[in-house]
Image (cartoon, rainbow, N blue to C red; front, side, top):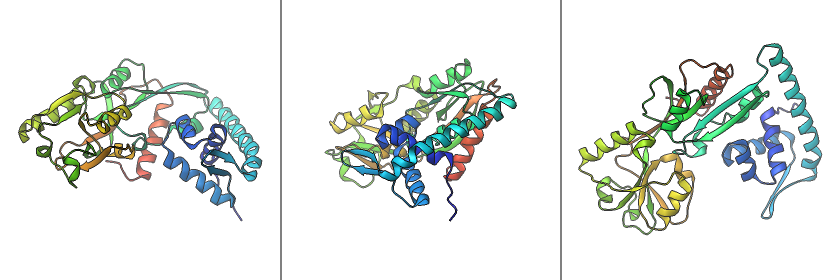
Length: 304
């Protein structure tokens, strides 16, 4: 029987084994937990054995997993040495690649390319930084960052943008609110309610587009500053302090006391994600990174 295993399977398994936790491994790998769990399940199905015991007290290696771990580490080490040797001969021995992403989206919406980058460029150090879109564009323009996943639309003079996906906006509401009783809500249902809203400096173009739509709809928001971290934001909503309009992917972050409802104007207030990078970049790893992003987005059919 032929077994098909790739380096991603091994890297994910080793991360979970070393962290004793899917959550810890996901944070270490800069991915969300669902794709990590799927990859581990695929590995176990290929091998025909369970490698991890997913118990209430944590994640532990099974006897098969304990036997497999040293060989997995050795295989990854050998693969890394082979890739380094090839890239060194090809004149791309290593460097530092700085990647940014906006916290406006759930991590599950961001292409799973971090592990692929490390496999392709093992000699490169990858730094991942979270900033608001306007700051990410400024860092790219100033040469402090190689690429970033930013909110769109956005002003980006001197920076190239490739739109990867668009998401409708949904309403995140306190579970005890009147609007939460509806299956769908409209801006008219939210009149007089306190709305957590991102600051204009985070993305002036998107802020102004929303402002124009609110004015056209005759809706006057009662604005409150939106915290940068969406976990804090959902905590404030759960406490009944207000509501927020968020990209649909943030519904993946569940919070007791918060309900999500489709918004009638959600398509008009949609938020896109774009890959931003310099018009001319000295980084030899950028082109390879862009190919990884495009491949991942096509795989999940969310391009365009």
